[in-house]
Structure formats: C-alpha cells, structure tokens
Amino acid sequence: MAGKPVIGVLALQGCVDRHQPHIEAAGGVFRAVKTAEEINSVDAFILPGGESTTMLKLIDVFGLWDVLAKNFAAKPVWGICAGSILMADKVWVDEAKTKTQKSFGLIPVEIVRNGYGRQRDSHIGKVDGYDVSFIRAPVVTGIADTVEVLAQEGDVPVWLRYGKNHLTSFHAELNLDAPSPMHRLFVESVLDGTQKQRA
Ligand code: GLN
Image 1: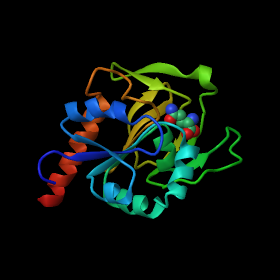
Image 2: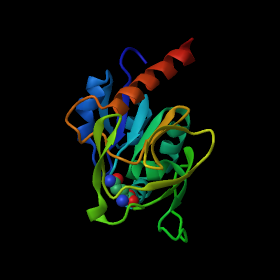
Image 3: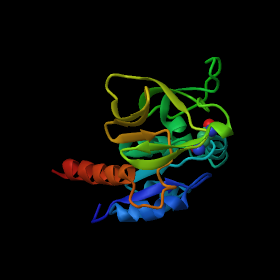
C-alpha cells in the first residue's frame, strides 16, 4: 500500500456513496467495488447497510462468494447493519431463533435480524456523543470473549472489534459530520495493520 489505504465499499446494494466523505476525511481513498477485479484491488472493505438477503442474492448471481471470502480472510472488513449480518458467525432470521441465514463468519457473534422490531422502531442513537442511525437494525445477542466491545446501547453491544474486523449494527455514514469516530478508527486500524505487516 503506497500512501493512503484504499477502502472498497461493496456496491451491490445499499448505502454506498455516503461513505465517501467519511473515508476521505479519515485519510483513506473511497472506492465502490463490485467486480472481482475491483475487489482484489483494495486494501480493506466496508460492507454497507441495506438488505442482507438482496446482497446475498446478488453475490450469488454475480458469482462473487469465493473472491469475497478470499479477500475477507486477508484484509480488514467493517460490516454495517446488513453488512454486519453478512459478517456474523451465526445469523438468526427471527427472534424465536428457528431459522438461520448464510454468512461469511468473520466475527464470533450471534445476531438476530430486525431484532429491534419493525421499521417504526428505527431510531437515532448516540455513540461516543455522535448521532448514529439504527435502521431495521440487527441485535447482537451473543459474543465470544475474544470480541472487544467498543460501545453498547443499554445492554446491547453495537460497536465491536475482532482483530482486523469491525462491526456496527448502526449506520455511521448518514451523519454529515465527517469523519465519524467509526470511520476514523477503521481507517486508522487499516493503516496500523499494514504498517505492522511491513515491520
Ligand atoms: N434489516 C436489514 C437486513 O436484515 C438491515 C437493515 C440495514 O442495513 N439498515 O438485512
């Protein structure tokens, strides 16, 4: 990586462009990625918020599962809301925990989709004094001891770190005050990781 880290935002579906000002203000380069070639060319990934079932469908239709899994094993990944659902080890589709959904298993947490309820239960929350948006968000219902909790809302962990990977059940990119603390930490940790690898 020469200079600034290139952060690829997976651009199959969901909230992609709003990450650009945050990534740039945090010292990174924004790139929307959707082909294998683009995916292979970036230093780290943001899996954006949107609709995880649609994203899974498009990953399948475009045959991107293997190239994504290979890249995710080697590079930092930050999953946001639907993106966090794609990352989790275990995903429950319903609160009764009867049905699971396929995921990349990049962080040892258990998550329940739409766990806060319906669209009208979406809300703005404060994390580190910064306004973030929970939009039909998942609820993290279990985490391994090895996962670091960076923030909770009540008893529920909402911002997590596991080695190179980050997870937020909320959107940070909708706040116009850039960079968000989450983008700043992610871009910094991508830089740190690279420097450590080089050393
Ligand atoms: N409810 C969506 C899902 O299950 C996530 C919503 C979001 O990303 N804002 O995929």
